[in-house]
Each structure stands twice: as C-alpha cells, then as structure tokens.
Image (cartoon, rainbow, N blue to C red; front, top):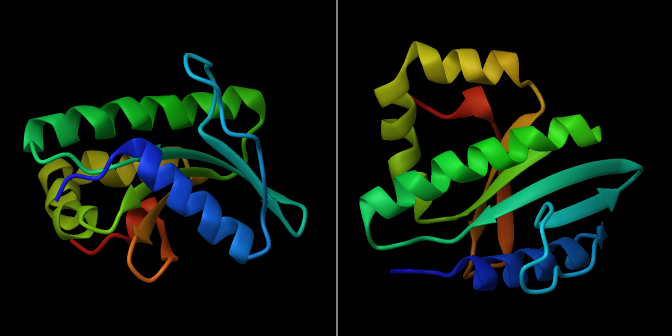
Length: 136
C-alpha cells in the first residue's frame, strides 16, 4: 500500500499535536528545510518524513536521500534527528540493517542523535527506535 510523504507528514503532525508537541509551520511548495521541527519539554526534534512507495528500489532511494537530509541537520544544531517512516517500513528495516551489517552499526555509533520513528497510520501512534535498536 503506497502512502505519500505529504499524507504521512499530515498524520504525524496530528499525532505530535495530540502528544503535546509544538511543531513548525508546514513548508510551502518548493521551500527547503527540514520537514518538521517539533518541541516538547524543551527538547527539539528535527524530523524528515518518508511515505511508503510500492517499488522497493524507490523506497531504497527515498531512504538513502532522507538519511543524508537528516544528518545534514546536525550542522544546524540538531540534537535529535528523526527519520519518520510509515509502519509498513517495519517489516523491511531488520533486513535493511542486516544487509549493511557492521556499516549500519557504525552509522548508529557515528550519529547517536539518529532515531527512526515508525508511524502507525491507523491508530495514530509512533514508536521511537534508536538506529541500532532495530532487531537484526
């Protein structure tokens, strides 16, 4: 089931608001920058959002692109960098982590601020995973 980035972002913003986060304004078409900056209890989260495409190669391309976008936020002072994914990504994440093995683990060590959030589009929740918290 394909889910657009825009729909994913809209649902995540709704979840964050419900959970007491303050969020940045929705970017205008063509505007650059992080998808969402969210704040709660004086903690700031820089969030890049990915929907879910039917094509595995398109999903891989999206993942690699968003990875570099989110770690680039470190130069802006980001302390918590989040890649927010729709729940269907859950099934493939362990395989992706296994495929890259030690390299995946090294990325997590090099970027301790990196998290993955899995968004359940049906029940309006998300699960926060440390990069190296993904089960191999």
